[in-house]
Length: 466
Image (cartoon, rainbow, N blue to C red):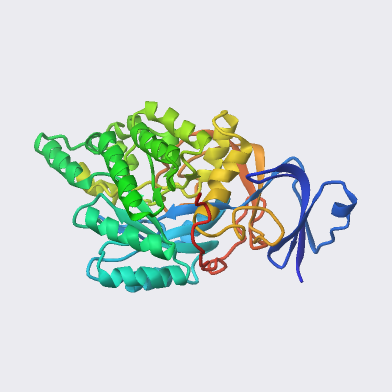
């Protein structure tokens, strides 16, 4: 039996802050005891980590990543090996990635392909959601089977006609099935049919620069799709989770639904909290670095997102990590913004950026852990194995220095992408040491993990329903 004790840190969970020592046995949290008490003094271990003056946090749970995703004629530049290593550097110890069903193929085929990509390559633990691109009788039966084996959430798209798009009838059928099998429908809520009209009109006018990506993907079309998804879920009697919420109008739709007592949830991402259309408008095609969907919004939308996080009308902050290099990938859209691969790198910086939000007064420390660790674990059936520090939980633990300063840069990040969306941003707080199931992955700012340590983690159904 291997034992580790973490002594002297401020343990922060979604519900508590306490100066406590943490005892780890065989990869799990065995006990916590207030620092300096006889109970803590009785902890014995093979290895002692000193967390004096530091925070001791649950490992982050990033419930929205896209490693090796095929998109727009290319692939996301992070593999499961590079992407999960970068996640570890940023204090994230579990990712839930998206397996993809191709049109005309089965869910099983898509899921097997993603297992093959990930198995033996991950530095931290991982699970899968399933992108449902082709709803038919066979797909609906497969959804039941996937729920039984721990793939309990299914993503659909109201955007990207001809690629991932589902119409309202297909969405309703999938929602009805999830109402029966306990699955959770995750929705990319944008009116893709209308957006495609606006894209073609903009290109016909010669509006080809990256900033037009944000202008055609209008906030009202995100709000309209969010409203429609909510009503379809209400008809189906199913819960709904709306991914990457970016616009004030969409937050208002979620707030209204939640005020009506519906099981409707929302996620936002750091890029919408810290970046804006100002970035999309950067000259010399630099704006292409910030092309993602839903798009970055004018800065005034940020206040609604922060308010939603404080009032719990938005419950989760994930990254939608989907990196494409500027050279050779983003450049595919020179002269036509619609051909710029959609996605930003971010898996490494989510925990740090949200700590900066604590420093800036947007959220509390416990709310930081709630939206980055505990709620994503509860939302996607991983709690209390993940997302908290309590006896029996996996020993996914981050020792965090809240006073260290760092400057975010492509020169120092560990994601496999040639730019940083936050280049030059100065922030306070930094991950020092990371344990995954008790095994050191980052040790005092050195990578000590390995590909293949990360284990596939089946999930139960959503634990966050009212």
